[in-house]
Each structure stands twice: as structure tokens, then as C-alpha cells.
Amino acid sequence: MSTGERITVTEAAARIGKRPETLRRWIAAGKIDAIRDGAHVFIPATALDALNRTCEQCGKTYTPNRPTRQSRFCSSACRWAATYERRKTEHPATRGPGRPPKRPKPGKLDLSNKRLAAALKRTRRKNA
Image (cartoon, rainbow, N blue to C red; front, top):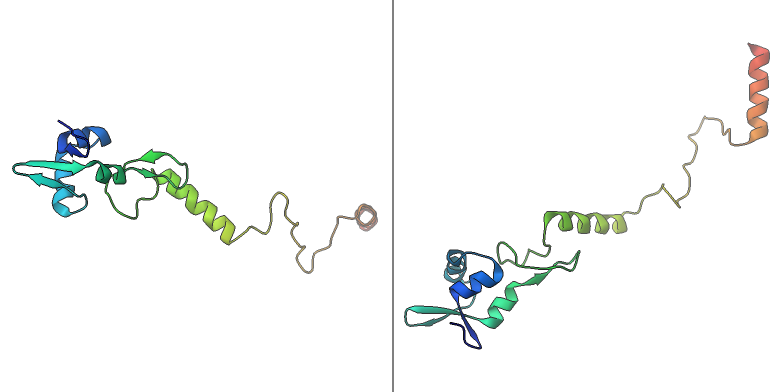
């Protein structure tokens, strides 16, 4: 039974969607605080709330598979999207929509001028 501040391991496991054995392993490893009262083990409600995290990418609240400091994203898709956005800001593209056009390679003629293109066509016809 749960009291205001203390929750049993079974109730805590049901709340966060994990198995009680998993929580007992986390308690043994020191990843979660626990209160031992004789043969019973209780988890403080504050320690259980600390397990819930908010994804940095999508803002969704989730419980990580392993309670570590590195789990900042709810899924690998969110981690990939955040990495992609970070890299795009660090290294912006040089071409694309709204970007300056490519520079012509040296030695190639710039045929963007219509009159020049028409003159080249006429000379090619004469030479052929």
C-alpha cells in the first residue's frame, strides 16, 4: 500500500511500466534511492519522479530503459533528429534553396547569357 511519500517497489514498477525485478536491480546498483523498513523496500515518490525525463527533441515525457545521465532522448529517431539539426547549424550548406548558386568551373563557358548561347549555336552550324 502506498503512503504519501513512500511507494512499494511493485507499485512503482506499475507506474513507470517496468518489472519489479528491474527496479530491485536499480536499487541494488544505487541508481534509485530506496528506504528499507525491515523486510519491506519502499521508494520515495521524489526518486520515482526523478526517473521521468523530458525528451530534448520532441518534449515527450518518458522513462529511460536505463537511468543514466546520457539518456536525453525518448528514441533513436529523436536522437538522430537532434544530431542532424545540430550539425546543420554548425556546418551550413553552401547550396540549396535560398542559397547562392554554384560558381562555374574555370575553363568552362558561362552560357547563362542568351545572346552568347545563340551566337555559339550559329557558329557551330557554320562549322558543321
